[in-house]
Length: 231
Length: 83
Image (tube, rainbow over all chains, first blue to last red; front, side, top):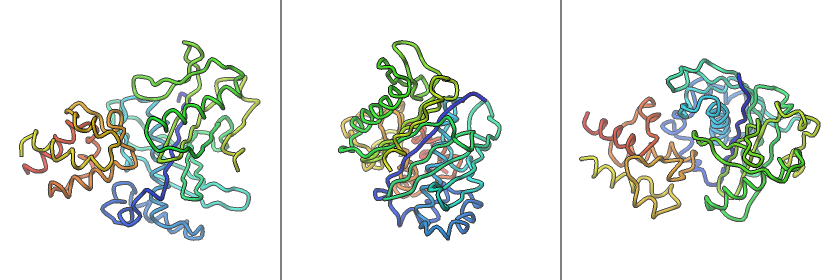
């Protein structure tokens, strides 16, 4: 499997909590097993509607991860199953999950793939990253609040945030982001695409990125995270 | 309802989730809901549920996966209305 990166962000206050709790809504996102799985998180005090969006965020992240590898994929939440999700415990402040993407839509008939997720839920913000690596060793990620919720401002801000981190760890000032034919963001140095899969997300006044440095040796010594730095 | 009528109703369904109203007025069957209209993916389930209410239809999971562009939305809605 080639390398990729996937993330997502949901700002809970603009989701409709009453609608989210309706079976006709959440049944389009959660499998029956995932609905049952909510009971395991009762100790965390996570409301059900937040759980629905947490799972959505994980699934969207998995979709983005796989879309880079299989550009013809279509996002189908029920074909991606969160098999395990553990609440924050001790020094671990993430909801840590194991996800299997099954029977994904697309002519290639993609086989199931198991990925790991980490999700931050606090102050109405859900931020998720996914990786094949349970330790997320080569994953860089961050999120930030911004002043505007327009699409243009979100898009510009998340690129600026991600490029700031990329420039810092690569010590380059000629980096830029574009999208490939499938709509996945790509990192370029000048006109040269770099082997750094990157994922961007925004919702309302929040933006987030994740990228993987697995195949960029010079980045491996410098696993910084704007996300962690902000806490 | 013919496709043009469905399209006009669909614009009303999409309106709450579309920032660029000018773009919405000029959509065609090739318009992609996420890539072109910039509808946040977290609102895609809202679009399906609102469409069900607007056209008094039920959209099954398999059909909802096809609702990526305006044209594919019209295909699904037309199919359900005429069943």
